[in-house]
Image 1 (cartoon, rainbow, N blue to C red):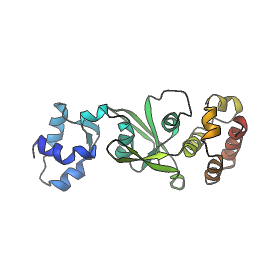
Image 2 (cartoon, helix red, strand yellow):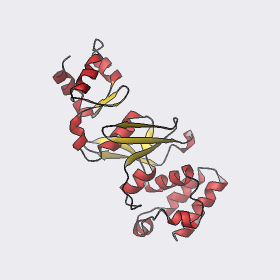
Image 3 (cartoon, helix red, strand yellow):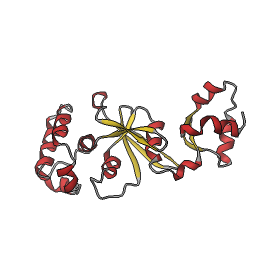
Image 4 (spheres, helix red, strand yellow):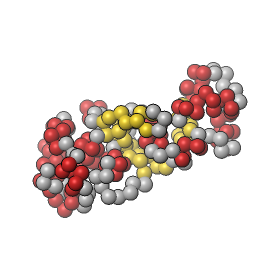
Length: 205
């Protein structure tokens, strides 16, 4: 298999896993991948995962990379909050959560971090469509905020919650407080419930 054959077969996937290549051609020489990376024809995302340099120009492709290189996971926390316009900060890394161990990766698309949550908390995400009809597991606004409160328990006082600078218009017009509260009960933590209630009070939801 030469590079043009490889590209024709896998380009539309966006991200390519080595086992997908072997499933197509069991005689594939893995050293080709290293050589194509060295020539700039491929980008290594992490061990066993690759993409094409053209995707560096595609908006929101980092979300696709985040889902693909660590599975199961979904985009959440600061990245999701910034995407919805809930917080003012520009986020320089892609944040996600997973029921696998905490980890991070760096590649040409940026830095990707994954926080660990329990299996029972792997809910509250939608399948959003980006790019060429590629679906991404992406937290709802309510779950992204709950994940933040859960994984960063120092948000436990009014001043600290105010430091989040949650967008008031979004919180009052687009944020689903009923869903937020229903999701919160599934965390089954009294300390967590206190932080949730304090946030509701702080932002007068």
